[in-house]
Length: 140
Image (cartoon, rainbow, N blue to C red):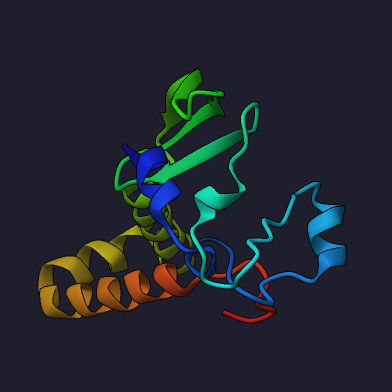
């Protein structure tokens, strides 16, 4: 389902303009999709034999699937979805572990018990930062 969804995306939704310079893209071994008209469908670039990876980042897992476009226009699944516990829940857990390392377990437990609204505010702010995280940005 994620792969079909991605085929419907517009190029501006898949690869933000100026996200990386061409030099950075090449250094990372990536191929920038260049749809003839900016904003055109990504599927316009899909040719028979083209292979691509869908990275589906969910709450509990991050799943990777590899597909190949067949001459008929259908997708062939080369590598079934598999993943690990690197989803948002795992990131939240590691954030809490960081808080424990910084402030100690006693403080974190006390904060959770005595300031539940403060904990909710903290997690909402952290969620906002996760959603705007960008490896091309120098600062968070």
